[in-house]
Length: 152
Image 1 (cartoon, one colour):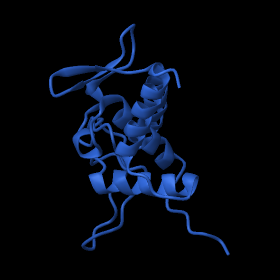
Image 2 (cartoon, rainbow, N blue to C red):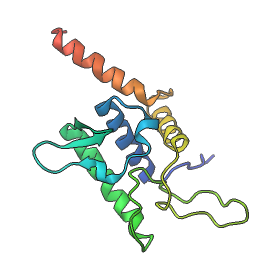
Image 3 (tube, rainbow, N blue to C red):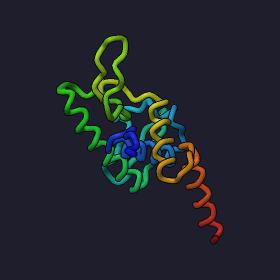
């Protein structure tokens, strides 16, 4: 029996980038869902993301994951043959046709929060065998950091 494929190769990459940014910033998916590409500053000595007037530093691992997503995102946007709408999180495949209209190409509209949450839930369930909310990654990261500081 062949299992249905719910994502393409780019969906897990986007999901990893969202999860990395959730862990790095302490923000949830709803707060990060509206980010524009222009909020990221990945080059230079102090990579960071601008969030509500604050500059949040990013680790080299987070920069690497975000850079990979931006490269994949650029390929999706290039297929639009138009200007880049600037949304950081975009759909990785066409949506369903609705109201008798053809499906929108990925990249035109921002990815919905529910889309980002669903992709995360599916990927983590496949990898770990159990769902795990995006904020739990931040909590795990903080627990590991505390354990390292305690000498454990």
